[in-house]
Image (cartoon, rainbow, N blue to C red; front, top):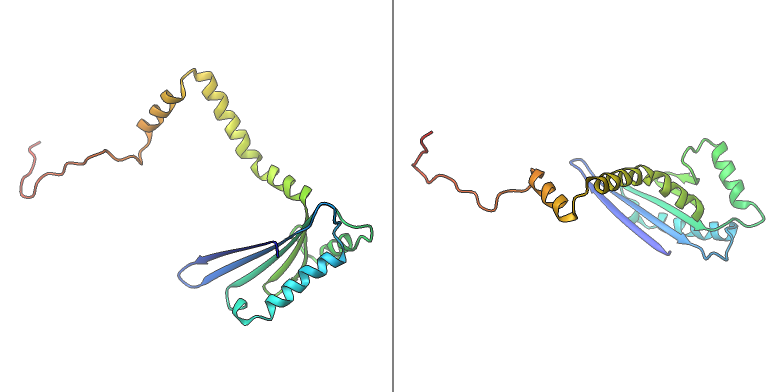
Length: 167
């Protein structure tokens, strides 16, 4: 395993543990049955360990590379998964609380670009507004600090016990 990420979410009823295993392949290696079988082996080993299979455990395995090999094994897996009704993009295998995804780096970068496009547009707009305002960074910061309702005064003076203020 190249990367193991674990996230626990606790709510009033249960604890959910999401586990993500990522197998990264060198750019010179084309994804094939051999690499997919390696990830399947990881899944099989984990699935046989009782301590990793309690209620609330989910496992996602990702195989990531630059391209597929010429046998089209991975492409065929993706097509088969799609024909079985798997709607999640790149999902090629699913059983109980286990899922295996195969992704190309180009897909990951494209998804990130699309997901962050809105943020980038908003930042560009803010940048343009700041440039047009002609204010310095210190002036902008000072103005924002004045408008920030989360900032409390340095010292709060409360009336002493037993004394009341006259209006």
